[in-house]
Image 1 (tube, rainbow, N blue to C red):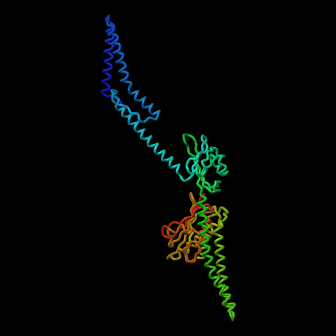
Image 2 (image 1 turned 90 degrees about the vertical axis):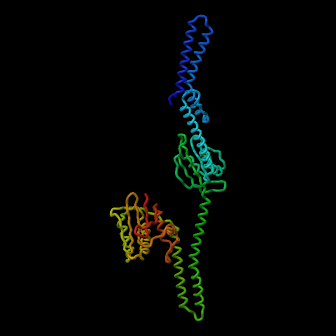
Image 3 (image 1 turned 180 degrees about the vertical axis):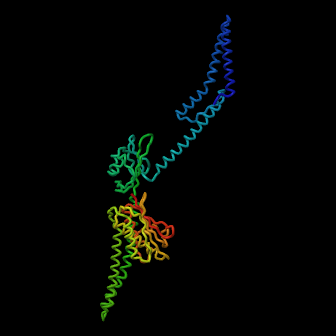
Length: 437
């Protein structure tokens, strides 16, 4: 941003004026009797020095005004690059900087207003906790939920539940959990999430509170409705023929002559149907009871070989194989895991029975995460049904009861693992179990 030609010419002119003025002053003082001329010469000399000073210091004035405007947040200030300074580039640069700062400030304020409105209108209650201001209700949902409470101490929120107040006061608590809130409308379950942020060098905890009692009640009612519907359907399916056959047996016994053989056959049929109904109820009890896991360490290879031999004796026409590293160890409940894998192997054998060369493989692979897979070369499981097959009483087979895969999932979840269904490279289904630490 060096001086331009105009600045240089004016600078030379002012210097020449000073030289001329001081030459005139010297001449006036050397000549006797020119008092008025001396005064005029001195004024001209001082004026020339002042003009030179103003000319060379205007840039500093411009920069000082820029800094002062910054300090006061005044981004509307503009600088006139004309007037002989010669620093037109500097003036334009300062004006561009002020315009950019003004635009950025306007954009920042608009973004801030948007974020404030977004936070304030969030449907989830948001609270902040810090050392300087304590607990603050940060949006409308929080003020509605806690009644515009003005308390800033976590202990003052104990009226909404001791656990809630303790979480507000615990600076290290994070993550999500389900708590009970005592609200004016009665106790409600709510999901509390906490995270720590940094604002202006200070730690601030952001806490969200989301009442979910209504959602949980709706889910519970829907589950109860489905359960009642399934049980009613299945029990009535068994009770209807039982009722009919009981009436038939009674009529045969009361007939003259008595048809004892027909009555016995009717009673035997009733007994079989009652036994089937008992089996269904027992299956439901198994579904509704979470399995108890007893963990132990055991070798994977002999465990897998035993399961393959067991299913192979039941399905001699299906080729079964185990692929396991000989030194691989598992930590699980061998009885429960064995029961789950028996269900999967039996289903796989049944699914692959229609193939030209039916084959089922049980593989257990180690590494960063142990994976158990049961693969078959049957028709596979359609994508839309891969979530439904684990639901209780869901089955696509006429002879199935929809219990087996649900029990498999219960066992896997009880271990803290995951199970899903993927496609096999050569076709068929692959039930994959991921053992998590």
